[in-house]
Amino acid sequence: GAVVSQHPSRVICKSGTSVKIECRSLDFQATTMFWYRQFPKQSLMLMATSNEGSKATYEQGVEKDKFLINHASLTLSTLTVTSAHPEDSSFYICSARDQRGGGYRNEQFFGPGTRLTVL
Amino acid sequence: QQQVKQSPQSLIVQKGGISIINCAYENTAFDYFPWYQQFPGKGPALLIAIRPDVSEKKEGRFTISFNKSAKQFSLHIMDSQPGDSATYFCAASLGGGNMLTFGGGTRLMVKP
Image (cartoon, rainbow over all chains, first blue to last red; front, side, top):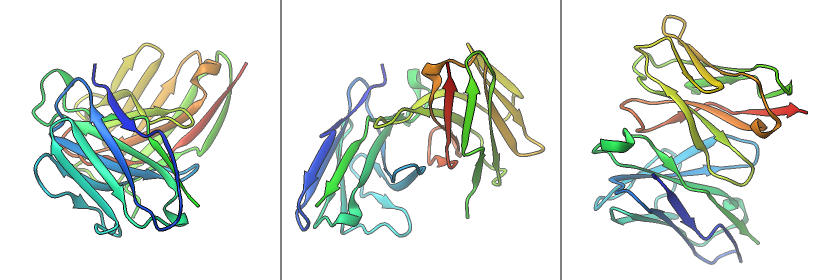
């Protein structure tokens, strides 16, 4: 149980294009989803937190107009990197949590990540 | 300001040995301390977690030791195996799995 999927797993795009990454909770309802960014050999940095049906809360230094987050349902959140540039190349990881508790004890469960390469 | 400091950055252990990774935190309001294991190109997976009302938690070969007064906690991997070679992250949060603050990570290599 507690499986989180991400799609695509890898994406290569040209500079200036937009890329959408999907995050799905497959066997539980995620009241809260988190988006992280991880550069090579570094730790995870939280980009934003989104609650279903609400606007995302972005961490300091993260451009909300560049990283658009939508959490329209309890099982799906999307991250759109708009007008991507080479410096946006990174490993993007989502996580999901059922804040209502229950069998999964309020844990955050992580997706497998999406490797974005912007040429 | 880095709220969770992790050491060492890298660790090499012989098969069968004990791997020890340490973390220190600053915010005394943290009430949940998980450890995650991450393989290259994959997302982190929860390994074991502890709350500050206990000093130790053991699950199989993995043990967390927690020292509230020192604001430190550590992960011990007993009988380390080559398959344990991965990057390990400690984290801390308020309110269970909410708003995790991660340590810098430890790259563990277990030599056969």
